[in-house]
Image (cartoon, rainbow, N blue to C red; front, side, top):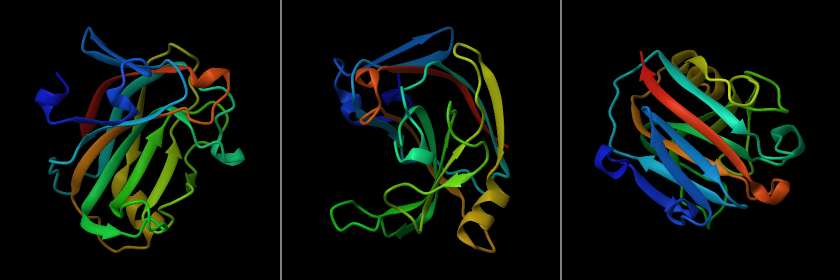
Length: 189
């Protein structure tokens, strides 16, 4: 189903022993069975200048010890939103450059609405926790893409959204990297 919607599984997302994917009642569930780092990308979207994104989602099991504050940059589910086509340096010659992106996630241990930098992509990427819901609770997160992009990257204009992706990273988490999350809807407004 994901492939028919233009998504492609990459890295550990292709390994069913590490990542279990299921769809039930129009909800996609992603479950990390062990430490892993995988992505589900759709690089063929084109949303001309959406102001906001509205996401309906939740976490069943948070990755143990995950915290951008403590440099354990892991999450049960990250929604990546890519802007424009200009490639920005990753900061490492071994990691391909990427268009600007903002990664949105639900956290247990970090501050909400703080744009964190990861290990790479300091010039073109930010990671933002949108809430700290209890496990199994479905929540709706609304995020202002336009003002966030301009503020985070110091730009006067926000390019169109040219890609979206889901990331699951439990590569440094405790409890063997186990986690689970679900997503029902992504709506660009």
